Image (tube, rainbow, N blue to C red; front, side, top):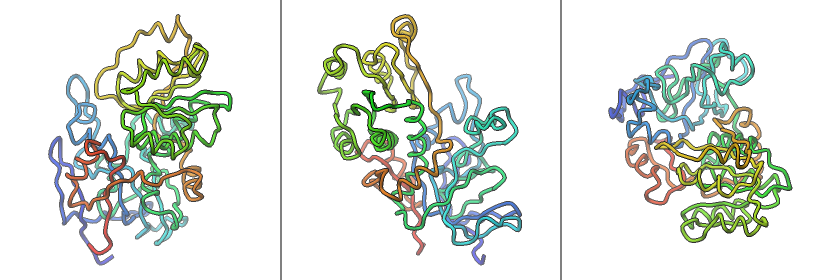
Amino acid sequence: MDKKTMRGLMIYGKGDYRYETNIPIPQVGPDDILIKSEGSGVCASDVKCWHGASSYWGGDGIKPWVQAPFIPGHEFLGVVAEVGSNITEYAPGDRITVEQIAPCGECRFCKNGQYWMCQPHQMFGYFTEFNGGMAEYVRIPTKRAKIHRVPKELPLDAALLIEPFSCSKHCVDRAQITPNDIVVISGAGTLGLGMITYASTLKPKALIVLDMKDDRLEKAKEFGADIVWNPSKVDVVEKIMEMTEGYGCDIYIECSGHPSSVAQGMSMIRKLGRFVEFSVFGEPTTLDWSIIGDKKELDVLGSHLGPYCYPYVIEKMTTGEIKTNGVVTKKFDISQWETAFDYATGKYGDIKVAIVFDEDK
């Protein structure tokens, strides 16, 4: 490769983010793949890291998790530009993506096939050795990466959703939806919409979506919701009780990130119901835990990442069975990263914001 440097966003420490035009292109070892990044979605976690959250940078009794310097962006994909001498499965021109987690392969979780809970928990886009897709080129160490092929016919706006929609599928799978279930999904952002379009294919008795923004509720209906409610306009707990003879919904999936949504779900779910929590909260969430035990005997489950979901999501996106249209609402060049991160907060009404790379630059 004649080109030696690339454009990208470098993070040197908390609050020290720099757009640079002369970052050295990574050297390819015998077990590495170098891809030319097509782009990366800007995740809520990217924004929280930018804002200096202690869960990333440490403080308030929390140890630092990220390892600077690094290039952010874990929702990325690209085209293979170069392969190491030991690589036979991939060749220049192949289009691939990788899962966010870079499992160690040695801890108890990895050895049990639960690689997404890898104890070291190193991820692309947060560590020096696992740079992300907000640069023109990304080195993929195949000994650690979970790699998936992406059809060339899949449009970029859809392909940028592979990582978040895989997380969505895993969360819905945790809920174990059946055709007899009345399901409530709280939150219709990127991940919520991924849950809605997948959950609708499971044909629950009713799929109900809650969100405070009416435009997102309209998108939820387009993606397969049977009923949509805005909690600021209707008493959603009362509505659920009316339609279930006072029992409550069978399954409640929380992906709004608001503490009030947790209490709301615990109020509307029936006895012996199933509550699935996906969100990462910006503040502590309090709850009367006796609801979970003595009052309702609930199954409360968590959900993390998208293990074993990428092939299904990629296939169903390509066939159109998983909807993606209109989720990516803004795209920016990497030189406009600060504007992109600002829009990704959602304060301007956007759903998914992405960084993309123009071939001409």
